[in-house]
Length: 579
Ligand code: HC0
Ligand code: SF4
Image 1 (cartoon, rainbow, N blue to C red):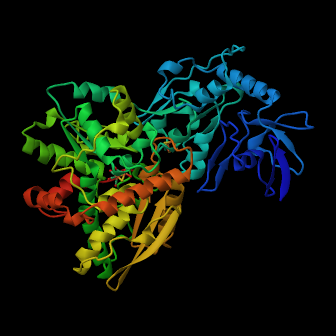
Image 2 (cartoon, rainbow, N blue to C red):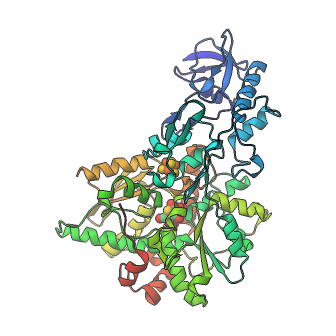
């Protein structure tokens, strides 16, 4: 152990502890910009590049970057001496000297680390005038890159390369010209980007933001000719409250429904309904493949991989195209909801397809891209017109001046608003496969599943596995969240070493609760755990907790679809993948 003093407080820390960590241990927060600590993933990004975290160490000529300077015995450190504050101010002014001055209209305003730290430092004047960079703004279907706002913290690069192993972003050029970009500075859309949005989630400035669909939504809501219906993803309800100062993990399902109704949607539905439908289709496919496999059919491919996460779909299409026959052909719940709304609900409501607008509220940025894919359009009309993120919904509620915290709790509309506990847990890693196991068990064994909680499938470890007993048949299940973890399981399958029957993969660490469109959680995994716990609470409180018992799903098959994986289901609810 090492003894030292920080801001006149004596403390003892383990060898190897940085000054930044030591200060944190005694409640002293040193401002940082480039530093990022993903505590559950064992990733500490500390390039020491921004120099905002400098501190004064007695007896040393130079200030030390606290994020990558280790504590030494007897050190006497000042974290906010005059010298430190002046240095930080100068560093900040230099950073701002070539930064665009459009804070008032910047998408990140109010949520920008650069802005917050400049404000906290009391920067009122910029004494340096730098050359301004003039990069072309890169618009992709999900993400906007405005590199004039990049401060070269390179957090995005760490997320893309080390966590996701996608490798779409890296530093290019030198000196003033240096910037983080796809290879050859090509547009993101032409790169191998999966639109997972994890880079956006950690960008401290407005350099990476989501493509904003809120103005389009406001226009559609105001159009009397349009019937605008909305579906809300499972993970949104566990995080939206954070945008209004509520504790992470506060469930705001009822308030969210009330807010959406206030905004003017004609009907407020739940993606969870479609998640129950996904279980019917994907579960049937799983049991079909499993039975064929057990009967000795060598052509049948196992493991079956879940296919509901669009960042994951983009990943295997780009990186493992030779394995595109393995994932389930079931569309994601978002993309099952769309055709059911426009082919079944529209008829019930007496609305023409072209007059119905289906909007989704998602924790995810890849969903914006997913709903624009050609295979999910009919004569150019998308089944889901567009998707807005949890953060965009929060902005809309703020624009409408609603006092979110005091809104009354309201219920979803029916028929596409009824859901089971199984569908709610889709939003947390392991939830999709747990929901599938609840239904597949009963269909396969013909017995009632008394204990629906498969605890072994839950948790935050990046790769997990569990054996589930199907009345004598042992099903081997794998789970990965984060694309770097997914890659490991895929490589096992490619090398013929995988022993799983079924694998759930979600692109974002934590699953959808950690999606790129959620309130920013700054890599703090305790926030993700609280959001997951909220979803498991909602599941526990539901009267029905197995997808196949959802009465509106039963009715949908009776009235419209026929049977799971039947002809109409295949046409409307399944898809195919591309190289
Ligand atoms: Fe998810 Fe989904 S669970 S991908 O994480 O399957 O975005 O929340 O909406 O579609 O239901 C995201 C979340 C969804 C879909 C569902 C799945
Ligand atoms: Fe990389 Fe995901 Fe960002 Fe694309 S969205 S650049 S894949 S981190």
